[in-house]
Image 1 (cartoon, helix red, strand yellow):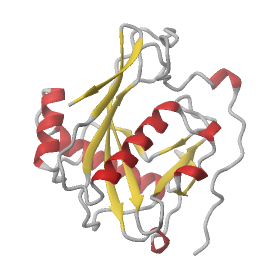
Image 2: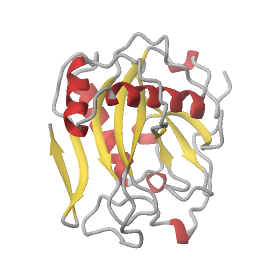
Image 3: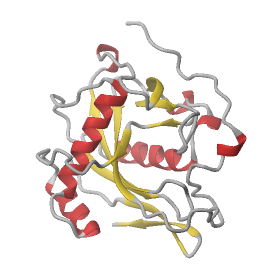
Length: 230
C-alpha cells in the first residue's frame, strides 16, 4: 500500500514559533491572560507488530494558530453535542469524573477522540477490540492564544500496514506511522514528546492495556511546569 512521506518539509513561521504551549522551565508568555482551557481529547494509536512501536501521527498546517507545522496525535476540542455512549474502562471513567466533577465526561471525551481520529486520519477504530485507556492529561499553560484541557487515550492495533490512512479534513496535511526514532526533533513539540514518552512507558509495563496505573497530568502552577500523578 502506498504511503505518504513520513513528514512534509515546511518552515515554521517565526511569529508562530511560540504559539504552542511550552512545558519547559519558566512561565509562558502571558499575551492572552483570560483564555480558559476547553475540554479536548486525543487518541494515541500504537502498532505493536514490529520490533518497535509505531504511532499514528499527522503534521499540522502552518496556517494553524495552535502548534503550526508540528507533528501531533489526532485529536481536538470536545463538541457540545459529542457522542457519549462510548464505553470507558471503569477505573478511567472514575478518575476523569473525579478530576472534572462532571458525570459522563469520560465517555464524551473518548467519543471525541474516536471522531477526531476518523476525521483527521481516516482510521475508523469503532471495530478495534483492544482497550482504549486514559493514560495522560495536559493543560495548556496560561497566556496562550488557545488553551485546552486534553485527555489522551491509548490503544493498540495488530498491523498498521493493513489499515488505510489519509487526511480527511484540513487539520492535518499528512499522516503516517512513526517509530520514535523517525520523528524529526524540530517537528515534535515538548508536550507531544512528553505524551509519547508516557505512551512508551505504559506499553513497556502493560502492552495489553489491562492494568490501572498512575496517570500524569502536565500543567503549570505558579509559573512552573509540574507533573501530578493520580
